[in-house]
Image (cartoon, rainbow, N blue to C red; front, side, top):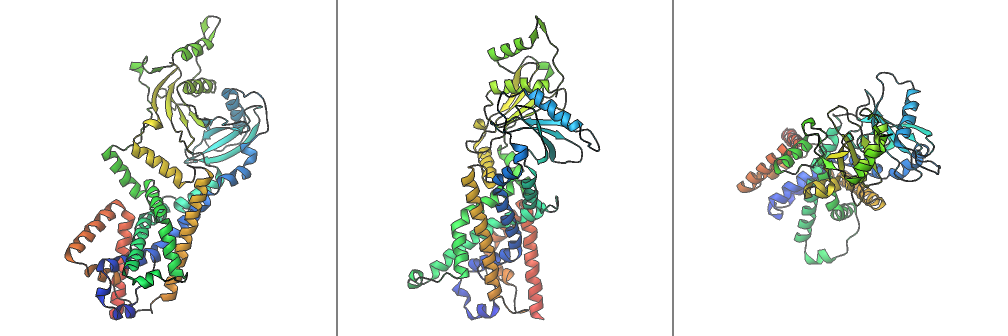
Length: 473
């Protein structure tokens, strides 16, 4: 947002003083700042708060996350039974909580999370925190999604994603991401064009740091980050995200996943664990007779499944184990460490055969799938730890300052009421015929792939027409 349309000033300047394309970008840049700017600013503020919260959460939820115990780690089965006993002692209305997943203690002093799903929780689950040494329960919390986000960050996540308004609210963040990249690149073009047209002595002169200059400099410094925010934000948006997924499917850029489906007709296939599997088989023998294997989802199987996954290359300290929901499904063990170097391998385990039946290793992901994973994690401030958090927060603060400065500029130079014509449509009509066709085709393509951009562009044009009709009266 660099200026506003001022008919009196515009009439005094010959049209040839600026190219028609620059005039169009100037009007569009102004409309993005005026109408989409509030949505972008809300996304910037909530996103900045979100990336700064991990350390805050460790203090807020220290009682649930950490323990002071020292000694031998108890089997997962014992830890899960302690969590189940705790849940049985609570009065949960509705259906009985179902054992959903377990995240073993990732380091000394950290508690194990035993998660239960329940009807009505949606994407959330109840996490019971168990001391892996003495089996003491340190309470429960609602955690969100596959990342297991704790309540404080979940609230900020909902604010950033949808203003806590559900699917309807998701439109705000998608609208912001759809226009952010174009506003940023358009601003760079306007800044470069102004410098190119300025006289050499003006370019070399030391200029005061006013609102317009600071707005421009901040935009130049963070333009790459703004384009990055826009692209990564759109990957998990509702409407544009669906288009992105369609394109990825057409180009074969789908992120690989391990198949949880077991094939009874091929019961002897799978990845043999070799000598390790032999030792585990012998461990389940008693007095020369095989002991009956526990049912799927039974706590007794978690230790066995974890051993098979560890032997099969799952070596991250942060893992999640999920039991199957049906008899023909495998257990899932996945790494959850999304910092650098990324460890997000996933394996499907059949404990009856003591084999890994399917796997998806991050090292074998296509390059695009890796870039998307890294981009999303960097966007969330978790890829490079504290350095990533500081960088994302700096971008968010700079973007917020840019928007505030843009509104200051608009307020100081706003035109008189009713004095405007139709700047956006007028600038478009001043383009050469070939330029008009090119811009029109680009607008249609962008409007199709970014539906909220297309709808809001129609609203921009409607505002133009209304202003033009009012001015004629």
